Image (cartoon, rainbow, N blue to C red; front, top):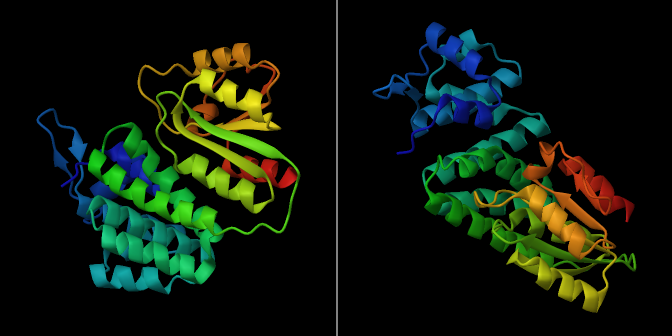
Length: 292
């Protein structure tokens, strides 16, 4: 069983910790345990409850009404939500539940059903990317077992690679890009997603992969002369210094245009080297790729 903090519940459900505490006081659906130092922690079942309750509350159901529902009634109400966004959030919640329970067969069934219904690109943008954003904080804080991360990452990675291989772009922008992850970054999913988007829009992609020294990036860039370089940094080892990476990349390749997206760009406040450009959100990534 995983033990989730109230901050984990906030990050996964979108419900503020203060609100969760109020719900605990007023209603009966959450009963956290406490550590010896009196810190709340929550079980897998309680995580699922808060995800379900948050979803129903977001789409019009009062908490006092939800509190009187049985588990089966809550599930029926969730399934009856008709808004497209609500259905997507429901599926993301299902994936979270299957990941937490290490039910990878069920995880894959849910993912494959959406791919069959909507196609790989919509599955990536509507399901996989929101799912990764929701659980990313758990990976960063080690609040799930590394085995869960590896199982999910490898399964999603397979889907992305199949999607990339199956692309037959009708456009040709005449542009090329070199994709890489810097040393100490091993999380490929975000970069593979960018690979899919770029290839689908007619950009020639060269993919170096994860944990690549800057000297190797520079070597390939010098040989192939791509129009720009792109990296997506999700989470890195504790000894990774983002500012040092930017400085070293700029010093080694001052004339190369380098695009960076991912979590580390969102809170970076220092000056960005002149040849760098940050894409801090999925919307910014999509807009940039569409402009090529």
